[in-house]
Each structure stands twice: as structure tokens, then as C-alpha cells.
Image (tube, rainbow, N blue to C red; front, side):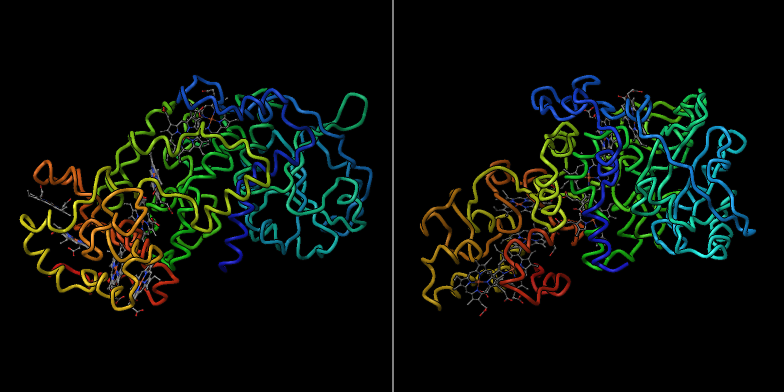
Length: 494
Ligand code: HEC
Ligand code: HEC
Ligand code: HEC
Ligand code: HEC
Ligand code: HEC
Ligand code: HEC
Ligand code: HEC
Ligand code: HEC
């Protein structure tokens, strides 16, 4: 997939939100208000307050305009049939185009759904007017659809049912007065939403809606977000929601050893697969923390709190600086305010995708920078190596440009004594020092050493941890030829 295509997918991601807004009936105002209250700042977990804010919409009754089925279609055998004649009790209409990539993408999910509901719900494929009957037959064959498709040769099915894009899924049922009612509309039908369609059908059949969750299988964040709107929105503003993109941007998305922690379920059955970059599992999604199906697989309830134990499987010492669950949780809290209007929400998401969102976890420990002299006694070898390194000459370099008093330069060429540094006097004059890379040493020195009070970079994953520290100064403007591997080699303590 091209960078452009993936960027578009990312920005239009959270398609459930788009879907729920485009739905025929908006959420009850009360549900929206409930979903957007930032009350959680004081109470991190108001019991059930925002849980499944949108669930009523998926589980409960909804009103849609009645479907229009008063038109003819052509069957694969060339017969002209009335669309309403194809309705057989509870019926799904899949409207699609054989050449549309989104349709090809959801086709296997629809095929699975049709098999799961076999004998209980009828399925009818409607191909857009631009398809030949041959193309529709080939699509059925390729994706194993267990039902027939008809061509919308008059294009009236599309026009009368507001089918401005493909694919779409409609759930209809005959009414007592001889007409039809619509029980659900998924337009566009994005990956993962098929689960919501199944839930709706199971409700209509009087079955347990949660029996739609498949034990041991991953469903994707979109599916969860259909009922958990606030959780989906807050997640959509965390780095977890772009973890695969991060690798893609750096051209590391083809390395399974990297991808494993940056997606959901690599190497597990039904989990992310290396050759499916547009999979809804191409991020650290809901199920990476809550397990396959979350708490909803019948008979397999897991508490939400259990997700706290999962963090360190990815945030281990090598891949996260000074990680602690307590320090990290507030940054991924589902109750964080997201009640922006659609434009502000998109802007916040764009900032995240563009790498402009803050990264609070890579922040250094609290305390003062003491300067290199405070380290030399105990770290003679590193100090000796450091003196030969260009970093220690960074202020001399500024002197050669008569810029040692220029606040626009000092920040990257030395270490500050006091924060916030306001004048040149607020900096040590030893160049880029130990604490530029290892963080303030005040606590570490007071305690006579230690590993929890200083950022040790020794065993860390260079790209996950170290690079973020270097690139605060080695920005694209200052160092256009930056190459992490080479730079690390040149700045080793030896
Ligand atoms: C059909 C709507 C629906 C879908 C889809 C859905 N949920 Fe839920 N979820 C609910 C409802 C309703 C509750 C609150 C009632 C309950 O706890 O069962 C809930 C509760 C939860 C809880 C809190 C459980 C607890 O013990 O506090 C978690 C976690 C959760 N869901 C995760 C998920 C994940 C992950 C997915 C996707 C795999 C998902 N949900 C999909 C409706 C849904
Ligand atoms: C499947 C692996 C995985 C799991 C499980 C996981 N994370 Fe992450 N987390 C990541 C990755 C990868 C990133 C970086 C994503 C990026 O920037 O592209 C990240 C980023 C973060 C960030 C933002 C980092 C920053 O610099 O500020 C926070 C905060 C965070 N995770 C907290 C948590 C917490 C809390 C948990 C457990 C409840 C958790 N994570 C579970 C993989 C994971
Ligand atoms: C064991 C799990 C794990 C593996 C394996 C892993 N990562 Fe990460 N990665 C993380 C976590 C966790 C974070 C978030 C760190 C934080 O902010 O605290 C992260 C963050 C990152 C970041 C964002 C750094 C930033 O601050 O901008 C990049 C880039 C990255 N990883 C690339 C890679 C590459 C490339 C590989 C393979 C060489 C890789 N990761 C392998 C877990 C992992
Ligand atoms: C990085 C890990 C992580 C990810 C990703 C994640 N969650 Fe959670 N979630 C948690 C943790 C941890 C808690 C429990 C917080 C607590 O108990 O303080 C939680 C709590 C919940 C709850 C119960 C509290 C509430 O919000 O009402 C629900 C429901 C939930 N998550 C759903 C989701 C859904 C849906 C997604 C995906 C859109 C998701 N989570 C993604 C870690 C995660
Ligand atoms: C009183 C002696 C002492 C002083 C002064 C001292 N250190 Fe250390 N430092 C240690 C010891 C001992 C360790 C090894 C801790 C261990 O491995 O348990 C250590 C470890 C480290 C580590 C590796 C941490 C890790 O996670 O592996 C770094 C980085 C470090 N020091 C940087 C500094 C810096 C920067 C300064 C100056 C601000 C400094 N030290 C001053 C004694 C000292
Ligand atoms: C506080 C800002 C700062 C940080 C953090 C920083 N550098 Fe530098 N770096 C500089 C400056 C300034 C120079 C130029 C020094 C001079 O020549 O005067 C430099 C020069 C270098 C050079 C030699 C010039 C070159 O590009 O070939 C290497 C290699 C290097 N840095 C690698 C790193 C690595 C690796 C990290 C992270 C582990 C890092 N730097 C972190 C500011 C920084
Ligand atoms: C955002 C951080 C940053 C700022 C601000 C900054 N520098 Fe640098 N500077 C660097 C880094 C990183 C290098 C090493 C890059 C390299 O050598 O490739 C460097 C290298 C240099 C060099 C040696 C290499 C060369 O290009 O000749 C000089 C001279 C220099 N800087 C002067 C300045 C002056 C003067 C200012 C203020 C106007 C300034 N710098 C502001 C980060 C910065
Ligand atoms: C440009 C960034 C940078 C500067 C400046 C820097 N270090 Fe380091 N330091 C690193 C990196 C990267 C590593 C891990 C890779 C390595 O061992 O070279 C490291 C590793 C270490 C370690 C752990 C070695 C181990 O075997 O685990 C210690 C101790 C340390 N540095 C101390 C210092 C001291 C003391 C200074 C100042 C005299 C200093 N560092 C200056 C980047 C830096």
C-alpha cells in the first residue's frame, strides 16, 4: 500500500464514528452528553458511566426510513426479477461493486456472516450497474459468498436506497402490512462492522446478541467502537492507534520482529498478518489490551482492570523508558476528554499522525542537571570517551561562530542548569553533556547511583527509545542526513 493510501485510511479511520454519525437516526442526546463528559479527571473510573455509550444503538431498536425494493434486477441466469421477491423473512442486502477494493476487503467477513446465519437469515447480493453478471459470478467464486448476486441494471436500487458508495449492508424484514422495514444500515460497510450487523440480526432473531463474538478470535477496534464510542475516540488520540503507521513511516513495517508489538495479535490465529497492511488489526487495538473479544465472549468474562497487567508485555525495559503502569495510565485513560467537534477531533488526529502529539512517557526524570563534573568520579571510562566526542565540543563550535550567548543555539549545544532556562547563564558550558542524553542526574547522584533514577540506554531498543532522545536536537533541519545506526556507532562510549 502506498504511503498516501495508508495516510488516508488513518485519517478516515475510526470509520465507526463516521458510520454512527451518518446513521439514519442520531444517538439520543442523553447518550452523547454521557459520552462526552470529562468528569473522569477526578474519578478515573466512574462505574459504568460511559461504558458502551452507543450500545443502545446497536442492541436496541432504531428507526430508519423503509427500504425501497420496488425495482427489477437481473439474475446470473439473465432473468429479470423483482427485488422485493428476494426478501425471505429477515434478509441482508449486500450492495457492492466487484472491482471496489473495500468490497473485496469485507467480502470474506460477509461470507462468514452468511454461513453463521445460514438457514435463519437470507442474503442477497446486489451488484452495482457497472458490473457485468460475469464479474458478479467471479466475485462470488473468489470470495466464497454462499449466496447469489443480482445486477442493479437500472441503477434504481442504488438511487432509491441512497447507495452513494460501496459496499453497503442493509438488514430488512417484511412488515404485517405487506411493506418492508429496515432494521440496520451499514454504509459504508467497513472492516469489523459486520460483527455489529450480526449482533443486530441476533437481536432480531431473539438470540443472545453477544453470541456473535467468536471465542479466541480478534474482531478489530472498529467492531468494539460500534458500542464503545468514547473509548474508541479516546483511543484514536493515543499513540497506540498509529503504532503500525510509525513503523510504516520509517520503512520498518516489513520486519516481523518490530511489527509484533506495534499491531494486534501477530502470530496468533486470526491476528494481524504481515501481508495485510489495511487490516483493522494494524495498530495496538482494544483487543491488544482487553483480549480477543474483550469481556464479551459468552462464558469468558475478563474484567477491564486485567488490561493493566498486559502493558509490560510490550512496554518492557528495552522498549520503554522508565515505564510504570501508574505513570502511563492517565495518558491512555478512556475518559480523557474527546468532546471536540469533528473538525477539532480530526485536527488532533492529524497532529498525532504527523508526529506532533506529545510523548509524555519519554520524558526524563524530575530533577536538576548537575553538569558533567558530577558524573566523572564514578564513570571514568564514559567520561574519558565523552571528552573525545564532538558533543563535548559543541560550545566551542558555537564560540567559533560567536554564538555562545545566542539563545537560539545554546539549547541544542549544551545542558541547562535551571528550567526554564531564560538567559545564557542558565546553561552549563560543557557542550552536549551526559545529562542531554541520560536525563537530570540530581536524584541519581544523591543516591550514589542506581538504574531507576536515570535513563540508562545500554540495552534499549535504539529505535523505540534512543532515537527519540537524539532527534530532539538532530532534527531534520539541523541534521538532514541523520542515520541512527551510524550516529550511535560514532557516539559510543569507548
Ligand atoms: C453490542 C455492543 C458492544 C460491543 C460490540 C462491544 N461491547 Fe464492550 N460492553 C458493552 C456493554 C453493554 C458493556 C457494559 C455491560 C457489560 O459490562 O456487559 C460493555 C462492557 C465492556 C467492558 C467493561 C467490562 C468490565 O468488566 O468493566 C470492556 C473492557 C469492553 N466492553 C470491551 C469491549 C471490547 C474490547 C470490544 C470489542 C472486541 C467490545 N467491548 C465490544 C457492549 C459492547
Ligand atoms: C501490543 C503492545 C502494547 C501493549 C499491550 C501496550 N502498549 Fe503502550 N505502546 C505500544 C507501542 C508500540 C507504542 C508506541 C506507538 C507509536 O508511537 O507508534 C505505545 C505507546 C504508549 C504510550 C505513549 C508513549 C509516549 O511516549 O508517551 C503510552 C502512554 C502507553 N503506550 C501506555 C500503555 C499502557 C498503560 C498499557 C497497558 C494498559 C499499554 N501501553 C499497553 C505498545 C503497547
Ligand atoms: C517488545 C515490544 C516492541 C518491539 C519488539 C518493538 N517495539 Fe517499538 N515501541 C514499543 C513501545 C512500548 C514503544 C513506546 C515507547 C514509549 O514511548 O515509552 C515503542 C515505540 C517505538 C517508536 C516511537 C519512538 C518515538 O518516540 O517516536 C518507534 C519508531 C519504534 N517503536 C520502532 C520500532 C522498530 C523499528 C522496531 C524493530 C526493530 C520495534 N519498534 C520493535 C514496543 C516495541
Ligand atoms: C493500551 C491498553 C488499552 C487499549 C488499547 C484499550 N483499553 Fe480499554 N481499558 C484499558 C485499561 C487499563 C482499563 C481499566 C482502567 C481502570 O480500571 O482504571 C480499560 C477500561 C476499559 C473499559 C471499562 C471502563 C470504561 O471505559 O467504561 C472499557 C469499556 C474499555 N476499556 C473498552 C475499550 C475499547 C472499546 C477499546 C478500543 C477502542 C479499548 N478499551 C482500548 C486498557 C486499554
Ligand atoms: C556516586 C557514584 C555515581 C555518580 C556520581 C554517578 N553515577 Fe551513574 N551510576 C553509578 C552506579 C553505581 C551505577 C550502576 C547502577 C547499577 O547498575 O545498579 C550507575 C549507572 C549509571 C547509568 C546506567 C543506568 C542503567 O540503567 O543501566 C547511567 C546512564 C549513569 N549512571 C549516568 C550518570 C550520570 C549522567 C551521572 C552524572 C549526572 C552519574 N551517573 C553520576 C554511580 C554513579
Ligand atoms: C542536546 C542536543 C543533542 C542531543 C540530545 C544529541 N546530540 Fe548529537 N550533536 C549535537 C550537536 C550540537 C552536535 C554538533 C557538535 C559539534 O560539532 O559542535 C552533535 C553531533 C553529533 C555527532 C557528530 C556529528 C555527526 O552528525 O556526524 C554524532 C554522531 C551525534 N551527534 C550523535 C548523537 C546520538 C547518537 C545521539 C543520541 C544518543 C545524540 N547525538 C544526541 C546535539 C545533540
Ligand atoms: C535543534 C537543535 C539545534 C539548534 C537550535 C542549533 N543547533 Fe547547531 N547543531 C545541531 C546538531 C544536531 C548538530 C550536528 C549536526 C551535524 O553535524 O550533522 C549541529 C552542528 C552545528 C555546527 C557544526 C556543523 C556545521 O554545520 O558546521 C555549527 C557550527 C552549529 N551547529 C552552529 C549553530 C548555531 C550558530 C546555532 C544558532 C543559530 C545552532 N547551531 C543551533 C543542533 C542544533
Ligand atoms: C549523545 C548522547 C550521550 C551522551 C552525551 C552521553 N551518553 Fe552515556 N550512553 C549513551 C548511549 C546511546 C548509551 C548506550 C549505548 C552505549 O553503550 O554506547 C550510553 C550508555 C551509558 C552508560 C551505560 C553503559 C552500559 O554499559 O550500560 C553509562 C554509565 C553512561 N552512558 C554514562 C554517561 C556519562 C557519565 C556521560 C557523560 C560523561 C554520558 N554517558 C554521555 C548516550 C550518551
